[in-house]
Image (spheres, rainbow, N blue to C red):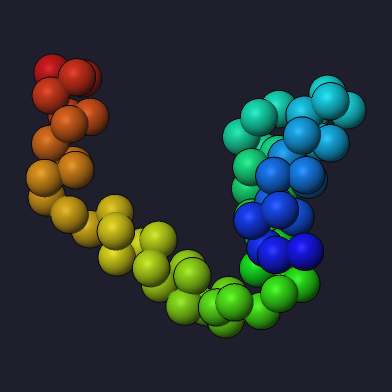
Length: 66
């Protein structure tokens, strides 16, 4: 079983149990990262933070709120 299968299975199980979709996605991804140790969790957090630092992506929500 690969990390992708585990993530999808956990997502559908949690969604069927009534957990919100966003929480199901986060729990499935974090669980598969911990079980399969694909990336260290600190590097995943760094990747997420660095992807939010793009000026082009910040312009989209600011355009919608403006």
